[in-house]
Amino acid sequence: MAEFGRYVMFSPKSVSGAYTMSKDDNCILHTAGGSNAAVTLPKASTVRGKVVYIQKVDSGAGYTVVTAASGDTIDGASTVNITAQYGKKLLISNGSSWSTIV
Image (cartoon, rainbow, N blue to C red; front, side, top):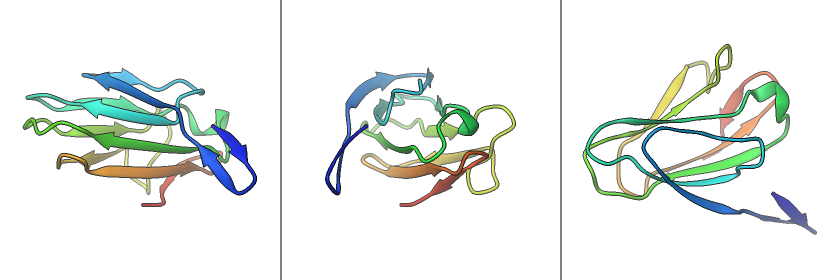
């Protein structure tokens, strides 16, 4: 993610099925399809201050299951679901866990 003044630039990546994010990923456009599929976040301790955007782009019955790396949490839970087409989560790492911004 590049910053230009007060603006942040995201680099969209389209993925389908189960996907594990790298430290360089910051914008995931996810197709879950007919069954639930996990998008696993990077370990929070390796990306302190990082903001990531994840969106479910398909109308399939499957959920995008945003999953914390082993030992991490997202607002105290190990997963959060995105159930609707174009549903989204914007998350930030505090170095030990992830918090939902939107």
